[in-house]
Amino acid sequence: MKQLLTFSLLGGGALALAGLSPALGTPPAHPAATVRPAAAPLDHAAFDKLLKKHVNAQGLVDYKGFKADEAAFNQYLAQLSKNRPTSSWPKNDQMVFWINAYNAYTIRLILDHYPIQSIKDIGSKIKIPFVTTPWAAKFFSIGGEKMSLDNIEHGILRKQYNDPRIHFALVCASISCPRLRNEAYTADKLNAQLDDQGRDFLNNPAKNKLAKDQAQLSKYFDWYKGDWEQNGQSVVKWVNRYATTKIDGNTKIDYLDYNWNLNKQ
Image: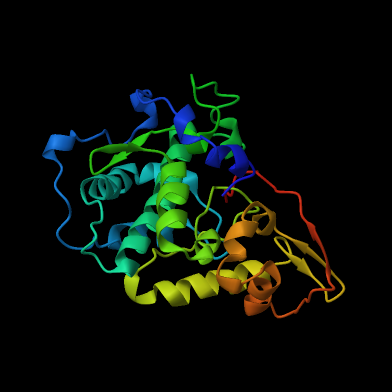
């Protein structure tokens, strides 16, 4: 979820360094030969417990708290690494896995470089060789495959599941992102959780400012316009699906500047 979407889609993953320093990779990669497809969907209760403990109602993260619970957090990440979804999993279980994985590994990436002011400092100010953005860094493995956050968002979630509501759920550790829920996503509640995220995001005046004659929308609706316009939909229809203040085709739409400051408590 980011301003550099255009060049990310044009090869962000190709910019990642396959042999990135282990400092970016917690837990370490598992050799592909030893990894077997997960027989049953993963239980995300461990992540749920950490989110309830270290994320407040506004979606702000106590990164120092996560750091203190690093052993438990890394144990959950190890479970993600070893239990890649298969096609036999129900669709909701697959989506839940990848949404939780994106959010969890984003937190892991911040912890690997904490304290920082912004996720965008990673790969630029920190000067990781051959990595131009934090989303292109292949710093974790799932099912024996080295992966980046770009791989999850663009290569899996956007490509395979055709549900723009994922943009309300993936949180890139920034103030202008949607709220990080203080609970994990679960298959049985996924639709309700995604709809709740949409309502929360569209009706938050810090993220979207709505009036009938003029609207200042999140850059998400500009960056991902193609997603919002799929299947006969439009930005206006998606906004009106969740916003209490409705807009129409005559509403003048501008886009807010994106605040990349860290979503920390």
